[in-house]
Image (cartoon, rainbow, N blue to C red; front, side, top):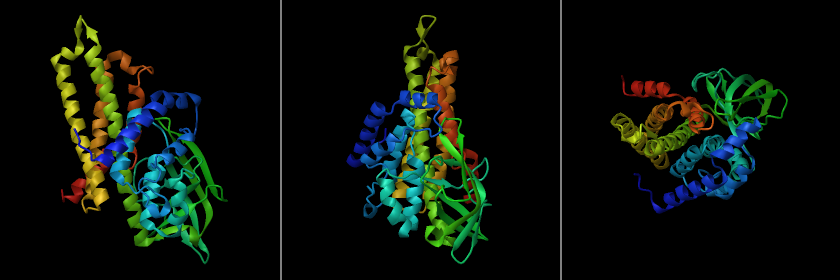
Length: 371
């Protein structure tokens, strides 16, 4: 079991208490059944801001809490356990990290709004079904007064009703990060409800005029800011997926402790005991790896990139194991909508693809080691 210092322990305890009480799985079920295209209750923004979560990685100079990525991961893990929906990773982690790394006027203007729960900012990066951050076809043509954007973005998480989009584009071989108002001419945002009932958006950009003051970064500084955001996003998403896996596993373990078959608790069958023990060990290993990746980010270590990729890949694998074992050990009842396992499985599958699946990051790690 992981040992947390006093500050991190308080973060984990407060997140666990608030989410289990105010945003349990039943709340997510109600959102799903309502057919909401937003995928979350807007009221959660204010609650997360009041707890300091929306500014968790932002500096105090822009009203952030500056508590770091380890704290963000603890919050995300509890969100995973409760299937709590909200623009935490999209705005408080990905966008906030990118803005913090880039600095400048964009951080000064939007940092306080993010921390205060007054703005949702979504990263418009992906252009296909798979995570390919190096393959950007969206163009940014530079003119005297700014850039003209053309392209199409898919799977923009929390892009529906976002206040701003951070669009990743290319000016020749140079990367451009532009802060775009989705209401301006040439921008089209189409809702795309995902497998896990969260919102994503398809964003079309047709001759969108972006003034120079809306450009967050260009060239090498843009690449550095985007890489920092992706590392943070991977690690915190892995933490949420770990939370999903832990909750699914705990429901399964409880079922093994209480369900009787042929007059015997099914948890007494050795085969099921071995499978449960294997899953428990995998969860503990994943927990350690995710924690190490988050700490590496906080410490600015050189191995942070590799660790966040390893954590993302490991969380994807243990998430699949936990949800599949859960369904199988429950038997037929595990396939019913009344059981939460199906909801955990859907969220797990969505997180597994988000910011790169296990295969994508494993391939990178092998290449990184020269294999």
